Length: 207
Image (cartoon, rainbow, N blue to C red; front, side, top):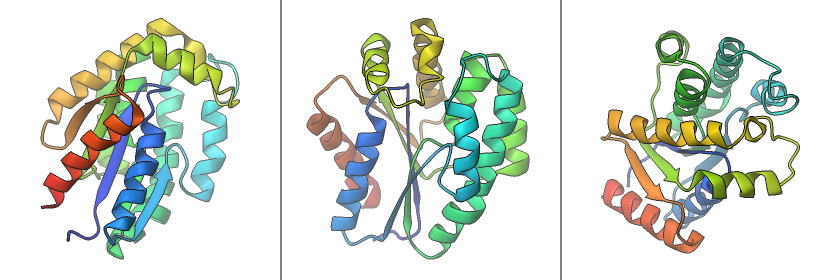
């Protein structure tokens, strides 16, 4: 079996990617892998502190440029303290979001800052996932689901449906840019069907 690899889940808010990332973590543990399930922003003590700045509060709290810097700082801490040590130890890291979210949210949907995002990523992160699942679903359905959670981390959902539509288009464009690692999964199916599609891809990839 492969050891020490990195899988990420991406998608619009409320798409079900968090649930699917947890299901995959359980599956890979059943396969005998040592799995770290983590998230962004967050995944380390310092990054979790920054998370609260990013996902709570008024929708207009930060400019897109400031968000890019905050996300990059959180991701660097996450990479140093969680992701890199786990992969070096032969573990599987499954992350609910990574750099692709910044490419889409701040680099495309909020502002046309993709070149800035890419430059900072190359300079400070320099790591791509081995495999990425983009859970794609109807933006209106996803937004309704996301707001219904009332998690207190609704800052991006509060930007409205038009923003979620832009996000969906951005993630689909991203999948076309990185076809070797990105797999688009229809999130409008039942959770079990979504999980089954993901399992098929992972089993083929592992073999």
